[in-house]
Length: 427
Ligand code: AOS
Ligand code: ZN
Ligand code: ZN
Ligand code: ZN
Image 1 (cartoon, protein in one colour):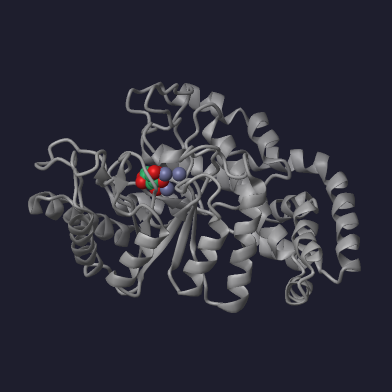
Image 2 (cartoon, rainbow, N blue to C red):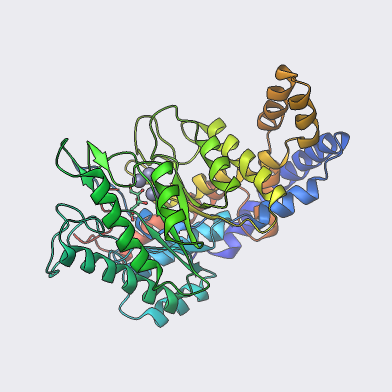
């Protein structure tokens, strides 16, 4: 991890400026009857999980351009996650991908993570590509395949992921499948969906009582004509049929352009089926760009719904994870920066004057209703994020501290490039 003294020295240089920015923001918020301390406390408690596959350079279907010092195995990935969390203080959990990051010894990995202040969040299964030595191929699908032997193999894999997750202290399984078709007529929609429901129900019956199962929908890719769980409608139907602890997971990049994602969020939550998120940003499709880099207002509007839901249902606790592919940035920097962007959207959403908003909505004062959201969104809450980090021994400016530490250069020496360095290039 990064030398704590280096972080403290950097913070010492920046603290005067932060103190005065924080005091000024605190005064401004106080005039509106908002206690800055309560916001800072909520920011400190905010957490978004890191994807184990996000620590290496991602790549596209055309090429992957690895950086130096990339992690070569899950232990090195956890080391990098620890750095992201140490500096940014918003990412205490890791979401594991199986089999890309299957540990040879689960207890050892769990302890290794614990020693670095990390735990394991939702587990991700993979039946969208063939693994070495597996008898059946997923070329024509997995959980919805026409051949029972393939479906059984895919169900079995998911059950193994649950078993591994139990040993790691996880309590959720996220299922995303690439199942679908490329041509009209290739598959019968009804029969394919029925087979998917049978398979996921079999997985669900192996789920421990305190676990949930998250179904992740995606409009297209790798299938380009039809996808089995292509949108929140199919996801909702499946989750409802499968069982109470089966929920829908929303990846921000998995919708048609311009779809009103925040409304999907509200709908799913209203009927108890919103289970979690994969945060990222996109311009065209499942671009998996850094959260908040393209459309930060959308991210804010999603959190505006989440805060509204939490006020209605205090027990509401969805899974938050970054699902990004870092192609042209240092993954550690992107993850630190992105987690802060998600946290920022959350804090701004807390600032929405909900009582006033409701009044404007009920009296159809349209301009003031939208202005109420904008007032929260337009406020610069950076001092709150910085103070939350400082108080948890993170860095006021985590990117600057990371660069000053020389961590990546040191990894370049300690981790000679390996062909197996992570980064799937396909997510
Ligand atoms: C794929 O497009 C989905 O976003 C998945 O959530 C994820 O990227 C993949 O499952 C990697 O495990
Ligand atoms: Zn995803
Ligand atoms: Zn995505
Ligand atoms: Zn995706």
